[in-house]
Length: 199
Image 1 (spheres, rainbow, N blue to C red):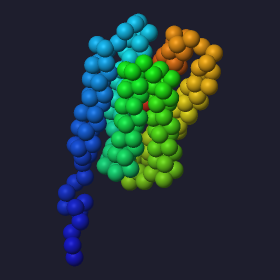
Image 2: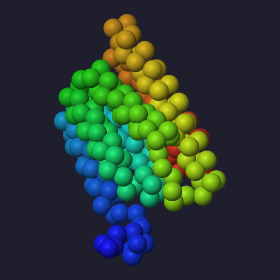
Image 3: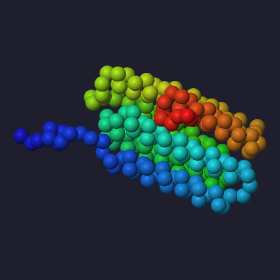
Image 4: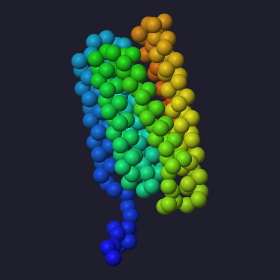
């Protein structure tokens, strides 16, 4: 009878996925910082700085999710695939921001919210939590529901902003987007989707 890996080797979180995403997020931040040197005008500069802050926020969200969901999610090929899709969308957003295509960048920034919502929906209703205690499973399910609710609400607000973009100046559009995302970041910290405390 052929032995299986799990019969002889204790499961642990693979180091590949966290290392890969740390490198990819680091490259996105570097891409954003590099773009700052080619910008002209305060609006473009502030929008790219906002974009870099959003990338850092997603990085912190990823690190918190990695710790929250542990082996059940972290060793999943599906999780890796969704993570790579989010990275690609964030890269498209930062490239659009560096080129001054504000509306395109905001559109791309809304897509990872929808992608993560699909991810949360799949794990909430199809996830197999074999390695966790009852209380931890309850907490994880609560966090997935919160992710779904907050992401869809924020994506809807950004969608409303995009649909009214013609009525706003570029400065107003950037300002409203920055406020919406700041509110999203504050709520995600309050509901512990990002494990960063202000004090």
